[in-house]
Image 1 (cartoon, rainbow, N blue to C red):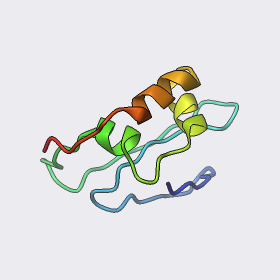
Image 2 (image 1 turned 60 degrees about the horizontal axis):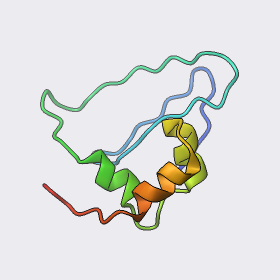
Image 3 (image 1 turned 30 degrees about the vertical axis):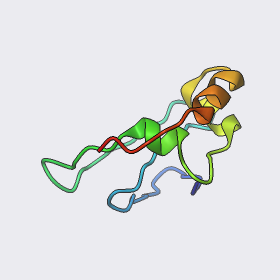
Image 4 (image 1 turned 90 degrees about the vertical axis):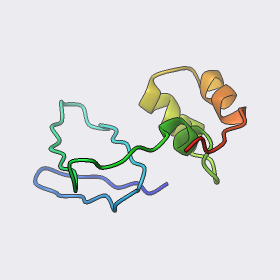
Length: 85
């Protein structure tokens, strides 16, 4: 998991193929602009990448990101995730 704080005017580029999510830790609304590198950027199974990652993503981060209880995240992380691509 790579984490960074962005401030007004900052730019962040996600490398091609990197699974990513954003979480607003501020107390006001945030705006983000996204651009893709092609018309067909591809498909990736997010559930496998998020809940089946090795090492696992901290359940506290996922609890905030998905706005569910910690036991739900722990249940999902305990499942057998395989690559269905």
